[in-house]
Length: 290
Image 1 (cartoon, rainbow, N blue to C red):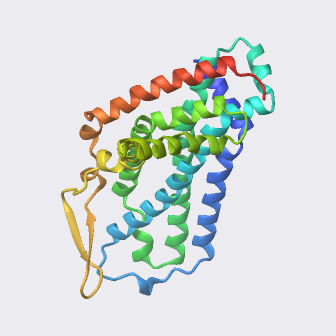
Image 2: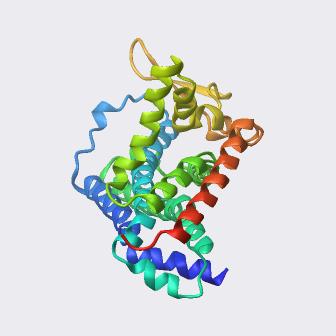
């Protein structure tokens, strides 16, 4: 356990972007709240403050989550490749640290540690933005960001997303680790070419698109299985003369934990991810410097 913790710390030392990128994003958002224009006239007066506050908090969280997804993918593609490229793999192989622990530590960093860093950054950013907006704007807008139940729900949503995305995207993360452990150059290109070539081969020779459907479901089907499409307990707020804004009364109606953890697709993907992780470990054992 101590070895894994130290290896995760090593990732922070060698990849300062893990904490620098969310710090920069948070600083930019706070600057926008400090000096940007807060246009109260564009906000319909009929929209409840709770709905408005929830929308603003979710917008901040969504921004961090999108950047997190991009950076985690890049990290997985680069982590094992970079060790071989700068020849630091020779140093780490000389230590009594197994390749299994090394690969697992990098996987944990990408799927758990980095999301937790972004989670903390998003929380700090939303608190500071809420304070700034409360000072700059009217009491109605400032007070919209201080609903305790909204903050609690946001924490639950983040933790739920971290756990479920780590399981759902495990085969994708493991595949990127395999590419990172195998490729000698153009690692980003090699992460795209094999699935693209398989899709073309299936289309040309079999005239089917089964593989493409499965890849699409894995990449873009997470929300359909982890969340309810039609949450209950929705409230309505007038957003204009002829339209209405439909917002759920809370995130609890969105979460579909039972459906996610009982779905065969979840655990089939996890099993495939375990096989690919084993392949990445074997490649790590056999590959040295580039």
